[in-house]
Length: 425
Ligand SMILES: [Zn+2]
Image (cartoon, rainbow, N blue to C red; front, side, top):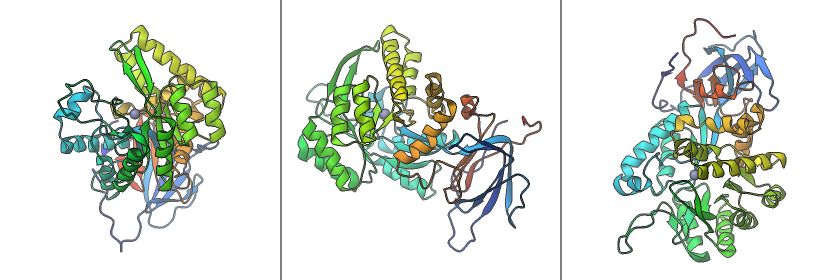
């Protein structure tokens, strides 16, 4: 049952054409707020929005085109709140030194399309890793229908301080590109924030700490990159332009400074303790653990040192669960192939989150994190028509999210449902 790719991009919208109306006949429709499965529900889509949800057997509006998803479970399109479409698995230095920006942009477009086909209709892309402001262009090209991909919020270059981001280790007289924008001191940082916003940043992402890994996975050093004054300046400048900030933090020192500064989300948080999580709870900060990135590294290099990292990460995640943090779903896709992005939900379940809660993380919670809770994250009248159909029941078996058979974004179908001969329902 190989799904057929319908189109690389939706056709250009004609102003005068009446909105297309389609009806999606669902095997079952998952209400992500309650976990209820509505057998035989029909989702009516007009233009790019969901118009209504009808019960089985209801009379359809005139002139609709019917999409038969009766063999599948239908749910809202997923969100991945931490991706790097401009990053590929493999040698980081080679990507920055040997691949041109046009080449990297084309690869990013391919990654964006792969994420969409995997069921992710929205992503927060958290820095281009040296590819400048290309993510803002990709976001806009997708929105304009030039290429197929998820809706995007982007961070452009991210910010760190001198000596605290790759490329590192080259002869001092050789000028090499950096994977982020380097800025030191409150005023350089404010200027970097202003430049990034001028060039399209929806988020300001920064490195609260930066680590050096040994090849075996042992963390050699974990250092806080910015002073409190620098982080305060960064978040304040972003807020002045109504942009939220996301902080990459492995450890408590960086995370606490970032939380004090006022970030909206802490990324990774491998070693966060109860005190840090309590601060996050008090300020409503989201925790985006990106479990997949580290588990993927451990799978590739299963050393005792990497095991320590993933064990600590699992402990932090379970601590966050017990303390009822707002847990967002983001995978760090780009560090690994995007078709594995749904592994993040599997790992959350593996570590103790009930499947419905994992689905909520990748729909309702991520939508809130992005400030788009009125547009996406649930199949409800008035929301964007972002829907996926999967084989099986993801509330019982989260791995069903690996079996995406239909994707619609903003009313445009990007995967056609395969013809079904013997329904599993
Ligand atoms: Zn990342």
